[in-house]
Length: 257
Length: 255
Ligand SMILES: Nc1ncnc2c1ncn2[C@@H]1O[C@H](COP(=O)(O)OP(=O)(O)O)[C@@H](O)[C@H]1O
Ligand SMILES: [Mg+2]
Image 1 (cartoon, each protein chain N blue to C red):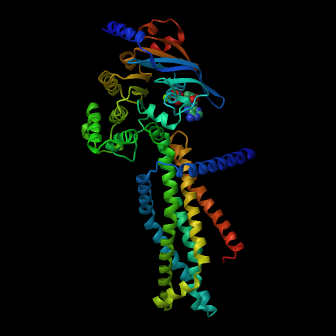
Image 2: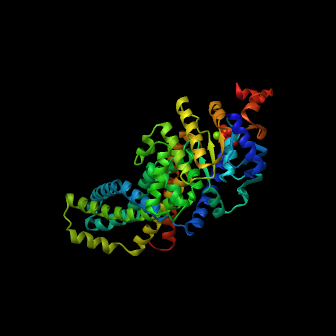
Image 3: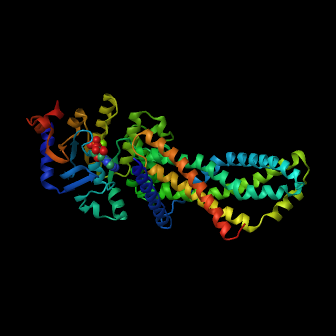
């Protein structure tokens, strides 16, 4: 079945243009050169996992994609627009179509679950009616199986529940691309598994393309169409799970133990 | 080592200045975050009003009681309302209010924004089509700049009332006489500069709190440090500004 899926993806890959195209990306903080000539393509409908050691610059990479960090040089084209060149309004229009799941969830502590979910809606789609907002919030919560947490505060939720709410908040704008920063890190294995399946399920439901940062090889195996290895600030390798697992390069092998 | 401290200090000073400039640039551009601004005003008032009024009342009472014996000795007891009104309205009320707000509001802002920074909530706002500087910083600085003067005026009134009670513990001053004397002795030159300086105090408290929060680094320790520095630095600046304000008033012959 995986073969069939891979073939299907290969077919799609040939047909369509990349939704994200990164070329020769450089980013440093002071003397710390984090990204060195990093290039990557994300094809529509694809799930790309970025694999790399802690501190290798994976978060920096996806923060550059969403425009939270400005690269030193290189281009990041999202839906054909070069992110570093965009002004605020243009950037906001791109961001409305790109979801970002933060590693620490980034739920607003001072707001209820409902207000957390309403926040991106009211900000990006200003002219929604009250009913529309409510039905979108309910839909998002039902999607992650937490319809009854509407009026709870984030502090009252467990780690897994918070991750689900964060996922719901990311999905509420029905983004075409989602960037996940270590979605299962810090969760127990069972909850991690649940989150991975949920991501897969919603991926299919809304046909999103995604970049997932992860160390969790179980999750990677489950969700990845392709894997990009980020080593020494550059894209060391990029291939399917099977191909990389079979590699005899030591630096790749150490991830698949 | 010494040069390092100096360098850090100059660096921070420059950053705070840049932060304040950015505030003025962004404060007057739409979109205006009115709801968040009103929410912040409410929180500030609600959080510090009890403490500000209690402290002001006690200060008024105590200073009056302690000034009285000296004046009695010189047979100048009748001057009591004049004397306390000058010190309470011109110095005690504004400075006490500012210090309480630095401790309660400034540290609160530093801790809140610091933890938002560390847990990526500020980044999350930015990707949700919101300018976090406008939403979080501009609203808070505006709220402190507006609310500290209001609180200081209330503190002034309450401390004078405390003074009235203080004056009546051992002597007798009628309500009408007390207030008449106070209003006779207070000139615009006393009241207006003391209100003006509280705007600066309020701005400082908001700006330093926000700056410390926004520049916190990772870890909960960073958040605690932001809150702490916000209090220490803004209190210090309040005193320095007060000193400068007195000099200016002196030069302009407002005394
Ligand atoms: N805002 C920042 N300022 C300075 N250095 C940073 C910043 N963000 C990340 N770094 C540095 O960049 C490197 C990569 O960080 P990161 O992308 O968070 O790693 P990870 O791959 O674990 O997500 C680290 O050395 C980190 O210290
Ligand atoms: Mg990271």
